[in-house]
Length: 282
Ligand code: FES
Image (cartoon, rainbow, N blue to C red; front, side):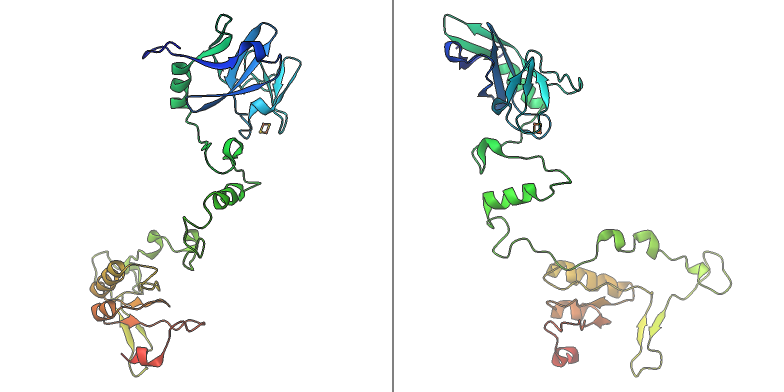
């Protein structure tokens, strides 16, 4: 083997045993290749089908074409270009036969340069080895998820598997522009922008202890645990500064956030998670 910074030969097949028109597999510089002998010539192509990444060394030759064995996409084995759709073309790498060495060679540098602009996602040492399907499609959205579970079990997620807090899809939540209020427009007769207009909201005005909010907004129910201590206390302080309250959520509740906000709401959810009247009286 010759090797320097600009050129490096690497053997990908033994010429005398390379069967005519039978695709063979090779791996160079992290790139899967397919080697095809046809009569006294050879071609070395990128070895993954452009459809779903199947190994083309597992395909077969039909006339002038290399056919992927999975869904029959075709590629000319001498050029790599599909007859069916000329826009689909496998990379064709420089290759040559060295009869003295009884070998087919390629230029490793050329292939590793190609891999820089065409990064390869295959982890050949992992579950399914060469036969991973890393593509996934809308028709098979769970394929990569199932493979990830088969590969790693629950080691990446903890023993409960993937969990997330109950929530509302972001697209259904009010956006920031929805909660901006031009107070001048809240007076019965619209006023100038700088005219003072109260935004106070009183909930239960005839109750023994009405709830007074300076603005008709409060910080919604996300418990400690769903949010960190720092986040919960910061939100409680911010809500107090804005003249409004913050809700406990239905999980953990921190004394620090209760102390930071004078309008603290204690959530009684339908499942009554952790709810007790004693805590409400604190
Ligand atoms: S993966 Fe090759 S044709 Fe579908």
